[in-house]
Image (tube, rainbow, N blue to C red):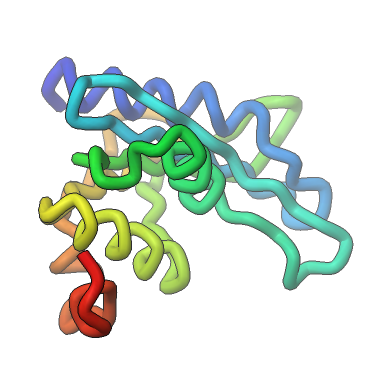
Length: 148
C-alpha cells in the first residue's frame, strides 16, 4: 500500500469510528481524495426506518458536493466491519453496494476521471483497488442524459 493510499484508508478507518449503526452493528467509513489532495470523509448513518439509512460513501460524496467539489473527486477508500467493544473489526476488504457504485460513478463521470476505489479492511493490510468502471461496467450516468 502506498503512503498516499494508506493515508486515505486511515482517514476512512477514523470515519468508521463515528458510524451510527445501532441496528446492523456494522460500521463503514469512506474517505474521498480531491484533485487538490484534500480528504473528505463520511460514515454510515443508520435509521430505524431502514430505507432511510445512508451509506458512508453517500455521506462523504454528499459532503464533497456541498463544498462544490464533486468534479474534483479522484479516489475513494472504503473500510468496514462489525462494531465490537467500541471498535470496528474485520480483516476482509469491504466493497461499495450497488447504490454507492452508482453515486461514485456520478462523481467519476462529472470529474472525467475513472475514480479509483480502494476497498480495505477495518484492520490489517487487505486492499482491493479497482477503478469504478470495473466495479460498475456499462454504467448509466450524466453522459447518458447529455450532462457533464
